[in-house]
Length: 122
Picture 1 (tube, rainbow, N blue to C red):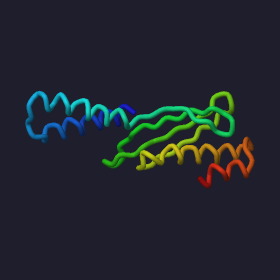
Picture 2: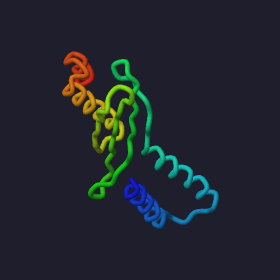
Picture 3: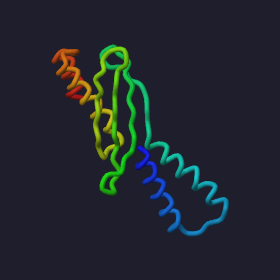
């Protein structure tokens, strides 16, 4: 994670150096906008999966100079299985992570095939 944060900071610094010079009021508006965009790349939350509360996290990552998103999902109190996925899509990474978790839970015999199909087909 440190490498991706450092890489993003470097991109922001380089982009800012090529930006046209503006007055102080312009910078005051620009800095919070950039900060909001950067902090919006990370996400963590909770979702319910088959009656169990599960946690997920999304972190950005640079790979071959392209932005990817890595998702992780785990359900404390239910199983030690962890779902993982990596995509270029910020909006799709949680879905792919959930699908990976469901496949692993089905393989471990925690859920039935019909329960798995509901999550895998959505």
